[in-house]
Length: 280
Image 1 (tube, rainbow, N blue to C red):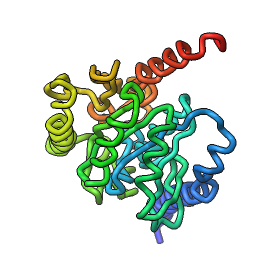
Image 2 (tube, helix red, strand yellow):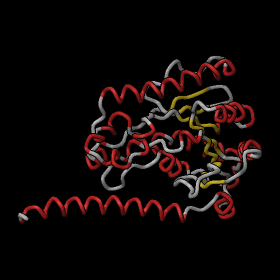
Image 3 (tube, helix red, strand yellow):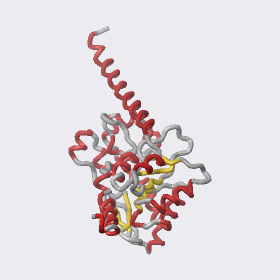
Image 4 (cartoon, rainbow, N blue to C red):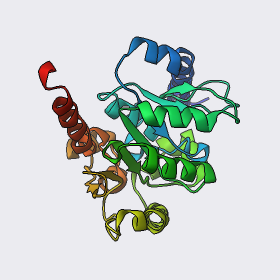
């Protein structure tokens, strides 16, 4: 065997070992993930309720395409950003063995999930809804608009990939994933815009037709008052971050969640200060 043959073999083993280590690390984090009851018992702030279709459970944070951390789910970045308001909780998928990383899960049976959602809608400090197509998530959207102060609502319209792509670890770390092909980009934007089109068609009449005609570059919609919607302009990752991640994808569909959601978080903080002037 030639002496040079050991170099690619060593490289392959090193790469495979790193990939396995990331998988094991993710599994260990899931084992340590606290449930919603434990989190709420420790953190007395009003929770942030995260609602989504289980079909959208694994939507990828496209900013995370790095060799260092692999492919992360958008929920993890959203939970980190909105954790400044309060503990982020969600209804867990009934059949899952381990909770996904991100929001703390509360598990309820099929007969009680709507009651659980209503309870949190009435008591949450904020409500984040990933707008989807399932009957369940549309019930949640319509109920939230009726039961919750709309200034506390935040609607997320994600860029979407095919399910196989979203779940593929190997795709997430492959060099091809660094450059977003035009056809794939157009498909992502089209899927996002279609969800907004249906949302606008169903919701806008009740708002006096105040929703913007299209999202533009935005991915989030919130409300300044009970009937005035606002697009939150998407902030892309910093150029330095993009260079370090070696991912041109970030320039088109990467989302810096903390900076993008800053206007929403600051609005809620102002409201809290106005309600509790003696504490500030």
